[in-house]
Structures are given as structure tokens and as C-alpha cells.
Amino acid sequence: MSNITISSELREQVRQAREAYLQLANLGTESKNQVLHAFAKALRANTSKILEANALDVVEAEKMVQSGELSESACKRVMLNEAKVELMAQNCESVAKLEDPVGQVLQATRLDEGLDLYRVSCPIGVVLVIFESRPDVVVQISALAVKSGNAVILKGGREAVHSNRALAEILRQTADDFEEMPINALSLVESRDEVSQLVQMSEELDLIIPRGSNELVQSIQARAQVPVLGHADGICHVFIDANADPEKARKVVLDSKTDYPAVCNALETLLVDRELSPEFLKKIMEDLVRAGVEIRACPDTQEKLEGHSQLEMENASEEDWKTEHLEMVLSVKTVAGLEEAIQHINRYGSNHTDSIVTESHEAAERFMNEVDSAGVFWNASTRFADGFRYGLGAEVGVSTCKTHARGPVGLEGMVIYKYKLYGSGQGAGSYSKGEREFMHQPLKT
Image (cartoon, rainbow, N blue to C red; front, top):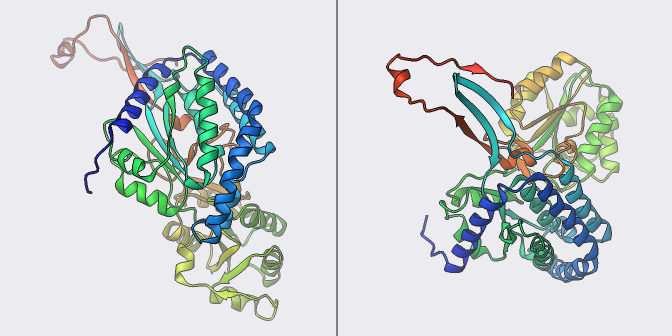
């Protein structure tokens, strides 16, 4: 990796974020909640300002679509309206209602009389969040950062630069009204060059969270010198078991694929048990096609439907099993049964979210135990893989990493822990010499 010169201005911004984190980390729950409610009030009061800024972005985003720089789905995610601003305000209020994740005693052990050890949750530190298209992410992340006691540096895409700037200014100005709330706990960077510098600041940053395309996430993962929490792909599966209920299967498949196909928790590959009747499969496929879905099917699937349906299907390739389509395209494969379905998912999936439709409790439990994904569902749409739907208030992103947080990451993923040892003058030497013995007695938390 080539060394990039880091500007003095950026170093100062990050230094201020570090100082702000150390102050915010010790801010009381009531004070943090007051700030969050003030955020909500300020967003509502500045709706016109936000939408005016957003109108500028929409014009530029539409130009980027025409030039091929931005997809139609990404352009739609840039757009805001009064309802979306109200949702941002409600998001701040919902985070305020959540339990404070900081200062929770996770484990307690009496090492010896007068020597008690506590594992206690604490903020991570300075977090860089890089995202694309959706300006409401500014508010989501800021709310979670305040509640969890972290300083956050935000970098959005240039397709939403005016909206991001307006939202960040509103939040920072609101934070500045509170003496205890450090304004530099929330800050914004706008250029790719600044990101290239930031990802190499291993001593100043504690965590990077990229939210966006496969290309964005892989680029950050390749260059970062600090931990990265995120996912590169959302190749989600639904497996229709031989014991599936037809109506449940239809609902789960249709919702998983068509509710919002341009997001990471949408269905990309449908696996069907070869024991399913052609009539069962035909109804689901016809529903998908009526909804506007292009089907790319394996030869076994096409053969099963031959003579039972006039559906037009493309031939699925090996590449389709590895592809996150993010549009109304669905890969369909017939498998020999549960074991082959699990093997296929663990080979081609992205460890995001996978679902089984079955009436067999045994099959469901085996699927959920053996599929190595952050979310494993039974008779439910993959679209439920979402921080708000999980009751997390909001999410900073979805992680397929096997670190301290996995799946939709809310407040609990924004904290780590430290050990607090309360002693009464003990030294370790007396234990190593055998003069005293550890009790290691669990304490109630």
C-alpha cells in the first residue's frame, strides 16, 4: 500500500473527534436522551431547508443516472420528502427510548475476598462510517453514536452531498446548544481523498463501517488499517423444502424478492426441493413473473416445469449463483433436498440472511444450525433482516463479519467492554507463590 500524506486539517478533525469521544463516553443517559429529542425537534423545524438541499442532489443524481454513474435504485434512495424527514425525527426519538448500552455489567467474578472483577460495556471510540446514496443515514448513525457514546466521522456519496451537509449542520448546531455535548462528536468529510487518508490512520480511528456497494466495501476492506465492520454482498437464499406449506412459500418468496429488490436482504437465489410438485412450483413462478421478476433457472427446474407452464425462463449460469442482482432478477435451482440446499448456501452465499420454508421442525432446526449466516429464518421473509425490524431502533449497517457484532448492528454493536478490577491492596505474587488461592466465584450482575 502506498503511503498517502495526511493533511493537517484532517488530522485536527480526527484529533477533535477523539477528544469529543472521551467526553461523550462519560455523558449520562438523561443528557444523551435530551440531545436526541432535540435532534428530532430540529429536524422537524428544518424540514424545508433539508428538502431544498435534497432537491439540488436529486437534479445531480438524475444527471448521474443518465451518464451511467448511478443506478436508478440508488437515485431513488437519494430522494427525501416530508414523510422521510419525519421518520428521521422519529428514529432519534426511538433511539432515545432504548436502554443505554454503556455501563452495563456483562459479567462479574470474585477473584478473592476484596478482589472483584467486572466486565462492563463501554463505547468503541472514533468510528468512520462511509455510505452511499441515502442521506437519512446521517441521522441514523448520529443518533446511535450519541446514545452509545461514540464519536462518528461520516462520509456520504457525492450524489447526496447537499443533503448530507444540511443534515450534519443541523445536528451539529443542535449539539452545540448543550454544554455537556461535544459538537465534534459528529463531523463530516466529503471527498474520496479524505477517505483514502482516513483509512490509513490506524492510531486515530477505532472502527470503520462501510455501507454501500460491493465495490465500496471491498475497496475499504483492502485499504483499511483498522477493523472493518460490514458486508460485501447480500446473496440471500430461500429454500422451499418438500414439506413446505404452499401458501407460506408463496408469501415468503414474493416478499423476499419483490418488496424491495435493491437492498442487501432481498432474495437472490431460490432453492427448491426436487420433490416439490410441478403445480406447486408453477404457481410461485407465475406469481414472480407477474410481479415483473426475470427468472434464471437451472436445467432441472426448467425440465420440472416443462409441459406445466408457458413461462419464459433464462438459463442460469454458474455466475448467477454468485451474483447479488439487486434488481428484479431471480436465480432458481432445484436441489436434491435439505443437505444439498445447505451445501449450496454455504458455498455460494455471503453469510448474510437465508430462510427455509417447511412444516418440519427437524428440517428447520438443522437448516438454522448448519447454514453459516448471520441470519437464519424459518417460514419468514429475508427482508426481516433489518435493525429497525429487529427492534434495535436503527442500524449502523449489516455485518457478515465474525467479530463482536453480526447481522443488523444496532446499539449493542457500537459498544465493546472493559474490565474493572476492584481490589484492596493485593499483589499477584502471593497467588503465583501459592500463598493465596483464587476463588473465581461468579457474582450476580
